[in-house]
Length: 99
Image 1: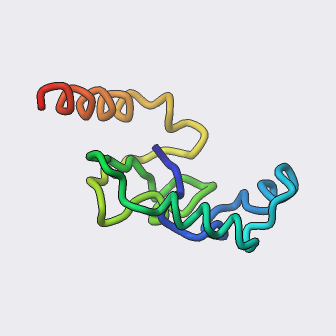
Image 2 (image 1 turned 90 degrees about the vertical axis):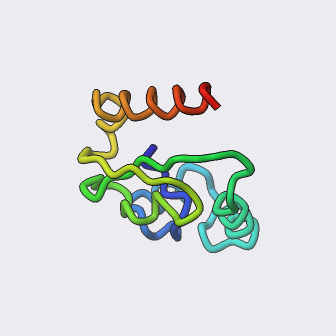
């Protein structure tokens, strides 16, 4: 949910804060290797819930062609509290349980 796993770190407005907090540079070899691993397709069905109006991350970096994508309208910080997002997550979990 609103995770910019599919794009470069600079597709967010928080990459500088990440560097300050962690001490890791986003262009360091180890960080780039981890980002590549995170972008790998998952071995299980996945759904990306993303928003063009996120405000902190580029919504296009929160989805890829490797999984289903559900676009919602939300800020980054408010996404976890939106009823439509919670309904989407419940629906996805229900589908998975039925399989």
